[in-house]
Image (cartoon, rainbow, N blue to C red):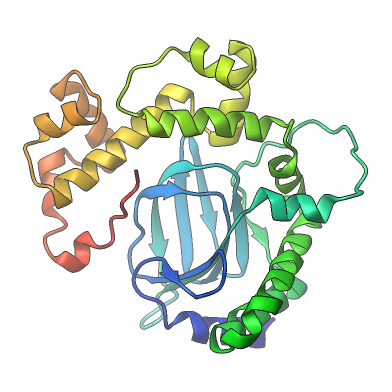
Length: 297
């Protein structure tokens, strides 16, 4: 494991201080000094150096080096990272999850009838076999002529290793078109597209083909938030981005992201980010500091 981790770290040190394309389908890497608050898309995320703490709804999760976690649906999150020591920035790689690729690995697998597994965003230690597959994947960055053939095969191997682990149930749920995850994903897509608009939960539940009670239960088990909390988090992340990159007064930005009360916006902004809008934005004075905040909507 040590040799594989060392080589993976040396490759990922080429990344920028943001998620960086690798030239490999669905694979990205990051070398970071601070953690951006953003909407995480469905992915498998492997920490190579340092540690990350993510706050997703009411869950606070910490991920150490050589552990991975799954994000099964789009979720807004805030977080912090810890570097691995002086001159050892946080390093990570991610694989965007494609339900069709996962489904191909499940072909012929018996349906056990087990209930949907709540993902919990828990971290899992990467096995030597998974790290070996990741290393072979990342080496393809320097072998583009081989990547077209080998990268899809190695992607399947990485997912196969994850299916064998503690989070395999979550991956299976993602790939089953009649499961709860795809139903909740439809509702999430609508909320993201209409995050500035008020909505009735009954309407969103019907869109997901669930009763209101079932929708609330499954939405929160998957996202760690209620639908209203999810919408609120989207609004606040977008408002922070606007305050940084399209400087306007906080009240006009509050109204533009769907708030009807500037005072309510100020209270909820400070609760999430620790400071009211003006003082929070003042912390990001340089372009380099602003670049750590992702475009989330």
